[in-house]
Length: 384
Image (cartoon, rainbow, N blue to C red; front, side, top):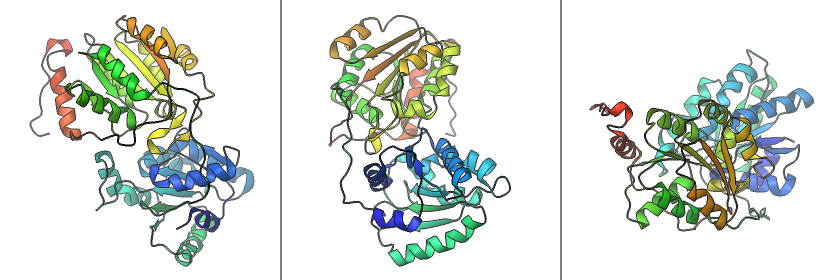
């Protein structure tokens, strides 16, 4: 299905959401046609997008479109159930959901369960679903949209679930990028020279993939690294808890700008607790680069200023190799640190994926912590 025709049939004038690789043809088209304007807004998270959509409906009476990866359904459920639902305010929204982890297809482990329950979750919050794949014809989609219109007219939301390859766009694509030259994988390699022996919690997407590849090249073990392959935006909270419960160990959190923005309230909690053994690194490339490069708002936000306001005592920005060297020289200091590293929005085309399964990674990481917390070994659950 061509994206232009898909948008035409949906019949909406307002679009908001969070980029997803399955929906890259959709947001490529929207960014090329509308840019980032009041007609198209890239949201911080899917709940944020649902609220923006609700404001549009209240203002115009027209049906808004919210796009997202299926992993974002959890963020969306709160406003869907407690604001949009027909038992509450009866605010209709058209959701467009990229179906990662569709049963019977190969995908990354973090998408397996999410893909299995995608339609179930939507059904449970009373959102009728329509599946679109590469075989879907215009007449079929028009029929689906007409049926969906009956629900929308009653104040109910609907969802079009898009399979991989379900949408295509062959028009002019936006030129994604930024002005920064530091290569993120090179920076991560430099960091591992300082991180040696420390614990690392890394965010979902290419940051974790690059950390894994660097360890492989350097023939280092992975047992001190926890790759947060799912749960986008929650890496820093996980790292905070690890730091608080392992006070003798230095903990590095390798975060991304899109992930940080998604749940930025975590910075206030971290700043309040002030664990002196936590270093929070945010790679800022102003993009959702792991799912195609669509922009975030991090280019216009003073991320270090936010961290400082949240109570981080040591805050700095790295824009060059020289800056990086200065940061690493002081990294052993025992003080909560926030470091924004401005990097280019690029990565290797042949970047691999972790070969260690998620459960094994978790077990290895727990084993590396054994004996550190209160000098007592971790109690192993033989049933897991």
